Image (cartoon, rainbow, N blue to C red; front, side):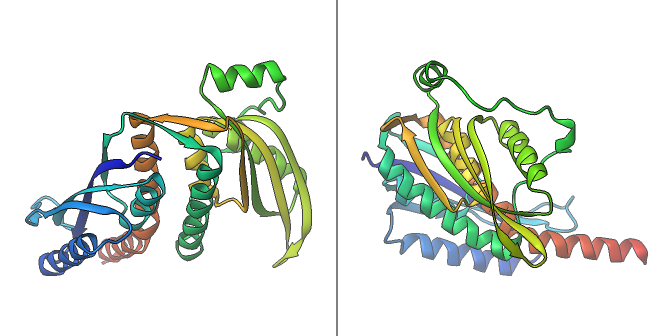
Length: 273
């Protein structure tokens, strides 16, 4: 697999200049000592102050040029959650389906760990207001989506908890359609009960773009995912950049929740006073 060259722009924000400077310096040191990726350079910008921001007035940026395999760059993206990712090379790459499955498995595990700590990611508008999607496509339609639309056919299994198995099935189908998936198959299987709620496995066969597949894996942390077709997945630089940016955004959303919660609580307290 071709080596990927990227530039990470990692943002730090805070309400204490010295604390933020120390945090940026520690992150920069971690990057310089990285063994999982090649580190071309790491630059730390001076912390600046925004006088118009009362809650988090200080911000700083780290710029790092890195190189590595897709797996290594994906893991680095989850580790550092850069605000911006720039793909320098290659312009296009081919990934074996089996290798991509291993990478998705790691994404699922790492994101699952974060969600266990900080909460779920998947959030949608009122699903009852969305139309029920089509389920099932002919072989000819599937081939056309793979060849013409460059979609990937894959199996995706997630754990769901709820009270009504049929309602779960219906809503999950709507959620997948909202994400941009085509659903070829969708079945549910009751596994028992946990904490007074039904524990259900939802197994699907989906068609989607590479970017959507990575998004779903990050949002749902599936217990199983397997790529059916094609055997070789081709991804261009803009697609990879978009997928990695989404992944970094999900991580950032999770790890900053405690800070956001603290800010909201302080602002609410000030308002009450």
